[in-house]
Length: 106
Length: 120
Image (cartoon, rainbow over all chains, first blue to last red):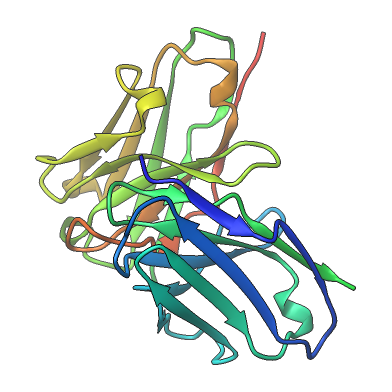
């Protein structure tokens, strides 16, 4: 089974900050990686797919990079609506989610 | 507009059964893989099961194999999850999600979820 490990688990930041979240796969997943945003009581929302492709309607301040086993999600300038929990998901071999990174207000 | 609406959740005793349904609209249901994903309280999402367009490819996470059955009805644009021999650790919000047209896919639309509680 492919394990996905996110870091950090919690991130404290201020509006306007540049934020980076890392996701590591236990084996190569090529670029078969997605990022989701989830707010309390809501379903996850797709942000990024194929490691770096921005889903339609998602603000351009979100970007993804990486391939193989190491990936990053970057928010270039954190906005009030971005305080949420973020999950990575691999879809190279079945489907596995990371444990999540909570972005909270500093 | 793509919509996925789950139903069928509730409180069930350990060892009991439930059947979840997901009504799909706003897209050509027969063209897409579909998935069930669950999220236990305070935890991250966990993929549960996938089914392809003609039901010839079905996959389950190990923890539900032999207990859960995913199925779909194209005529009714509906996805189902039959859950038997339920355990306390199956307690979660269960989401229906749309996959892609091929086997390597992300989940681009999700329903609002239905809550399953397994407790005596």
